[in-house]
Figure 1 (spheres, rainbow, N blue to C red):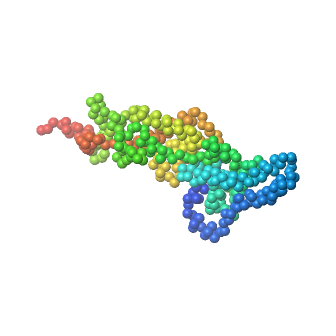
Figure 2: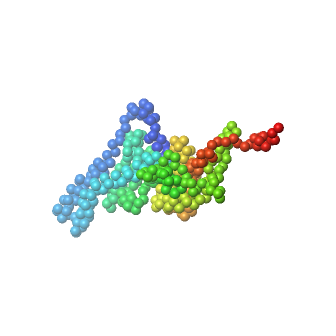
Figure 3: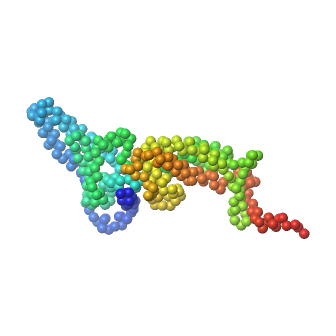
Length: 363
């Protein structure tokens, strides 16, 4: 099922982003009917029912003494239109997540299909075989039903169930956190950057941001310890070395707190794992792809892995830290030139040949 979810979700996403249909003469010439008349069809018989119930009440011809059934049904019919509008608004707010840049394509593809139908996306019209209907149910709830060629069975959402989930803070479509944005913010908060590295108003890192000097390795005399790297043509230069253990000890509490906050919405953690963390790709690798790498066979399932077991929470914590260190912190501890001007000047590499030449006695 996961493979089917990925394939259909990606197909819909690519279809919506592509301009191909604009150059398809057959599609341009076709007549597309997007008039599903959802509310009109849902309420087409309610006027008659309402009149019958009012007549029964006025003439005291109720089904049972006290007219409870008629009173309840009238109340339901009077409240139903507002409930329908609220229901459709809530559904729209959930399904629109399928349009997000980082939407996790491992989720049930029915949500993307339903959103395409409800928002009138090309090839998801009534004339393409799709339909959406709203039904008023005897118990006072309502349900919406999506049908069409891409759906193996009708996709149904009940208003009371949706309300209960949303009130408890649960969505039917998981939103993927913007890990890139979160980690850039976190970089300025973990306490390893030098003063003045962040914009005090926005918290964003400034050009020239660098790791604080306390995390740079020094010898007992307080002198910088450098790594010598060859830069070509027999030349070399010094680069700073960092106390990686000290940096990790400083960063870890902030990472732990960040992940703990994320775990308050476990479905978003699953989405973050599937879209960013699980695949183990770098930010630069993802930037070169049309679609972020998917976690593939290590992807977590919303149906099977929620609620998350402790081992998965701990794994997410470890991999989240690795992702942060490799993709965001690493650039500030790699190939950094010394702040001491004299030490920053390239120098001739002391190769074996050079050393032998300098040690050879002069005639």
